[in-house]
Length: 206
Ligand SMILES: O=C(O)CCC(=O)C(=O)O
Ligand SMILES: [Fe+2]
Image (cartoon, rainbow, N blue to C red):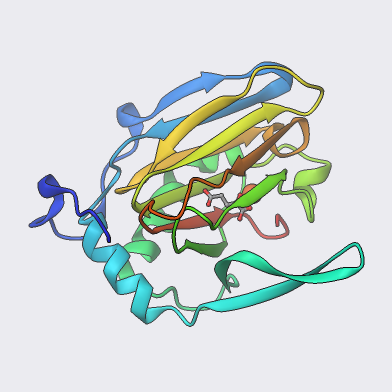
């Protein structure tokens, strides 16, 4: 089911350098995204560890007059909880070191999503439950496993952008991205392999 990346089989699991490896794309309305493909080496081994080491939760949500399954598994690590792999602690520390001058605060929490196959997804939304709804902030996402499309579109309408993210890729959504743009992982059909995303956010951003 899970198509391992051949280049990655023997690499130790660890994030790479940031700095000049990061490419920024400035978007409309004060938003931007940074990309660092293949940032996490040994990503396939990390994927395998996370599948078994994380106490995944299936959630159910009210949708109008029905209660439906959330189409992905979830686990949230609050800021002082130990993350399920040391490479994720190192990733958070490196992200904080790199972005602190611009972000002004550390990355604190880690939200994990497990998309078991292409039927799992997340609908269009911004991370606006906390301060992201009113302030500029950053959400950094490390993806392991099979690449899935992360789509972005401006809230007021306009062309969408699509990034295929898996196998250790890093994307950072910054500036006004959470309140002026929306993002989604669209459904992709049942035969698509599994992906796990790790979203690092500052305190009070959800
Ligand atoms: O899995 C992803 O890359 C996106 C997840 C996401 O948008 C969220 O959990 O808020
Ligand atoms: Fe999100």
